[in-house]
Length: 231
Image (cartoon, rainbow, N blue to C red; front, side):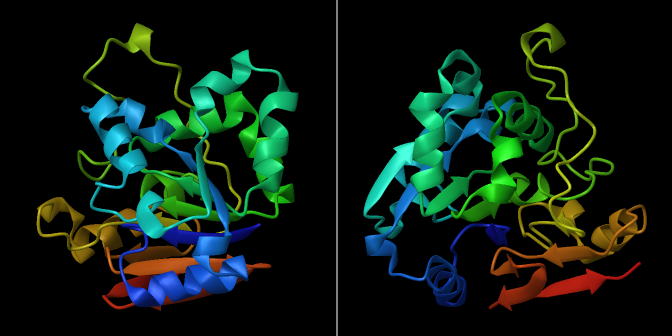
């Protein structure tokens, strides 16, 4: 797969140009499936999913003018025959993976069977925030209330067991929303402390930055600021 891992979606023209290059065609000629699943581990599950799908969320994804757009809800896939959804995933030009709770998303990536398919897909994987973090080797410790290891708004019995292992499809970690004005804990200093606990390099990226990965080659696309913490 080709990957575009962002903090806040397709937030500027540089990131949009990178997406078009990965697609190999204009967005208006590409099909996409959006995955809202991570939002269901948050404090506003229905609202967050709705804003993502209808294009009113602050992170541009679904509203980019795709030729076709469908919804792939991971929590539903175990109840469906694979013949009904696997071909749709294999035919898609892009998978738009929304943010929210990364532990919840990781569980359903595995439980749905999508995680096993990802390496073989031709689609461009576009991950935002937790949608980017889920591909990394590990999640580390929670660094603020945007990244919750255990959702606290619902009884534990109402949620699937979290899986502490990330999917490990890239060999670096991602610290999104760095220096976001509405989240003081997401400072670059805290990013550095968080990165110190990772066994792999960490990219701290702000909401104007994304990372592309093509055949293992990593490139940062940014109109904002970012920092790589090496190990």
